Amino acid sequence: MNTKFLGLSFFLFAFIATSFSEAVHTEDAAAVLDVFNHAVLAGARYFIEASSTDNTTTLAVTASGICNSDVILSTWNDRLNITFSPTIKSNDSVIREGTQLVVNFDAPSMVTTMWMIQLSPTTGGYVVTTGGVDRLNQFMITKSEDHDDLYQLSFCPMGEPFCTCPCVPVGVNGDKNLVPNADPLLVKFQRHEYGAQTI
Ligand SMILES: *[C@@H]1O[C@H](CO)[C@@H](O)[C@H](O)[C@H]1NC(C)=O
Ligand SMILES: *[C@@H]1O[C@H](CO)[C@@H](O)[C@H](O)[C@H]1NC(C)=O
Ligand SMILES: *[C@@H]1O[C@H](CO)[C@@H](O)[C@H](O)[C@H]1NC(C)=O
Image 1 (cartoon, rainbow, N blue to C red):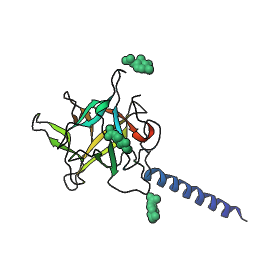
Image 2 (cartoon, protein in one colour; image 1 turned 180 degrees about the vertical axis):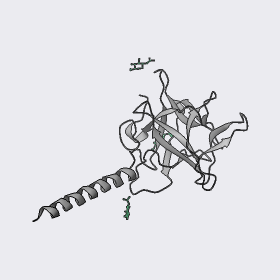
Image 3 (cartoon, rainbow, N blue to C red; image 1 turned 90 degrees about the vertical axis):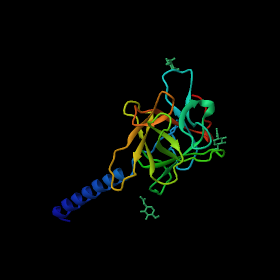
Image 4 (cartoon, rainbow, N blue to C red; image 1 turned 30 degrees about the vertical axis):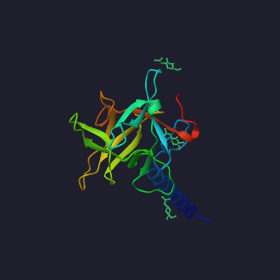
């Protein structure tokens, strides 16, 4: 066997190995993890717990009523199940950081469940509410820049064709409404099946 051939094989192998790992890397963003470090799954029910600095109250994301409800922060007792569905189907059902999602409440009593952004008739500002009926109401989950075990939600405007508008973080206003384009609310995901509870 001559050394030229060996050199070439090595070069080819290195090249293939590099492109393969790059391809895998770009395709698979990190899975979003719940509080028990299980991957968050599409369609499974989660409670969204707001991270808080005082240990006296645990706040959760819920709805303000049963019809066209606003999405609000309330006490842990008021929590509602929430599901995430990727807009681009993947082969596994893992929710990955930075992928576009549709968010729904999973509550039998609710008339409208899909999260959307709307101008609030009362405050005049945009709020996260329910009533979305199409796939224009996209959100994404990314890891907090400062806390490795916390996540933030963002709203991703998709209304305009060819719009490349950036996603904006979802925060909370003084009325405990979730609102787009605010200081990010930091959250954790708890799955009922794994014994979700105040932690
Ligand atoms: C919350 O609990 C943690 C751990 O139990 C403790 O270290 C921290 O000081 C508490 N914070 C407050 C504001 O009580
Ligand atoms: C959340 O969903 C689970 C089933 O996954 C159900 O048993 C539980 O009662 C629901 N909790 C609330 C608060 O809706
Ligand atoms: C998903 O599955 C299909 C058919 O089973 C396959 O052709 C495709 O390459 C898979 N995609 C990924 C990203 O694994």
